[in-house]
Length: 169
Image (cartoon, rainbow, N blue to C red):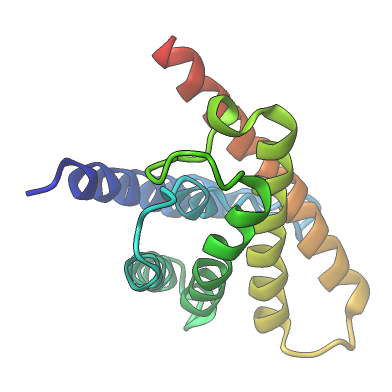
């Protein structure tokens, strides 16, 4: 069995359990919730086939839906983020970089990684909260939830990435 699949599976389970057991119970101002499991898609390597990214993302979103009682919202949001991820990564990676590049502070640089992570997290949160609200009558609440959760999730993702980077050096 490929070591990358095992590592992805372990990260899948760790992020899913952290999200379901801890982070889903945090609601700042009753709107802002950290979505750490979006980190899974941010860490996908460049050489992973698009179909595999979609399957991993759909499975993670579906499992999150099951554990958090958000029917289909997480699966749809993660699948859309998985669809966008390879194209978004191309914007931040040069053509000369390695095919098996894994996005991180080290490989992309701090500014590019922060931009990449925040953009992909925004795509995820925008989709998630739009589908969850399914209307724009309370657009202020939608706006607070979307951008607040994006900021909090991005900060949490960058903190986790920083700890992972420091742990390897």
